[in-house]
Length: 125
Image 1 (cartoon, one colour):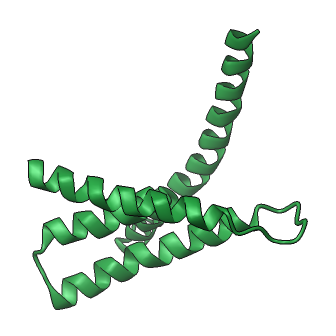
Image 2 (cartoon, helix red, strand yellow; image 1 turned 180 degrees about the horizontal axis):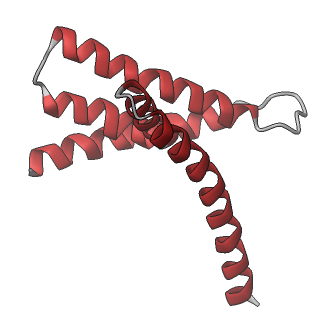
């Protein structure tokens, strides 16, 4: 358990540092958050790429999977986990749950961010 936590932690450090470095890339005066979109696309690709490659080349290597998926991809973007979970629901024949999960996540998380902003403004006033 401790070794698994360390694997996730080290991977998270790498993923978070990569996310920070990637956020330094600025596109010429775009009002659209392209850097975040690209980060989420890269993370979504990477989490499933790692899962697919490891299942074929090193099956059963849970610690490496934790390091890559939960650590690096999770540190880089938690959107990658959301994407992987949604895809798994869809692939397992749970299209209704997959679509509901995707829509609910987007709406509820944006709402939660707005509520967090309101709460911070209320406490900071």
